[in-house]
Image 1 (cartoon, rainbow, N blue to C red):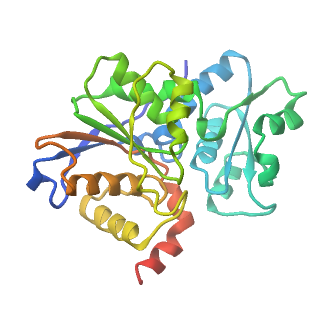
Image 2: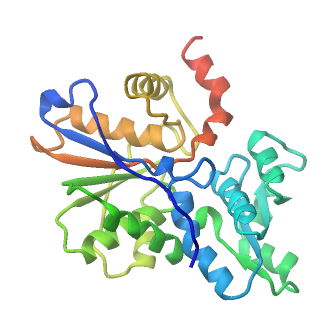
Length: 301
């Protein structure tokens, strides 16, 4: 078993107009789990790490883009549990940034990969590690059944009951775990996903692949702001307002879009009065580093 102590409270927050509509919002502060292995990054790695150790693997191999919080989390987890790490980076050769620098500081090997070759991750793994029996494959973002299994634990950890639970979605792994745990517990809670990329209807299919018998979660697909890692001034202004009002940091790629969606749905009277909402803060705040210049520019600073 992996020994890893963390703190992830449920924090009640208030925001303009929410209380006027008698809507109560709490945040599951998974961003507080760890500075680098935070949020669903830890939860999606946990059982992969346990499987790797059970199979006597000592080399984690994963995939992601130049600002991937999952890659950073894997690098830090490797250093924490004395495992080698390698990441196939979907990027031009030689690209460097603060996140990649931190990964290297944690001891991670970076292999730059063009987008065409990156499409077949298993082939990439086999090409470089077919003769390495110690290498363990972890899909991009920790996607897959073991990742969802880790996210299931969120539901069992809750101290309060909620009418609605929201999470941001990239691959659907976190959403699948939440929906499965809610269904297995017999709760009446409605699970919602806010996709952060265009054309996200595929997320239903991905969730179904992991848990074929589960009810379908609710997707709100209109909050991608142009696509993955895309943004618009109204999103950035909302983030600035939210952070300055609550003291809780969110970022434009995932959690900013998530909280924007919740706020917008409340303003449209989507929820019944006295609804209790839990929003999962999935961490990944280092992703903000890749957008800070655009953030300042779009706010006119």
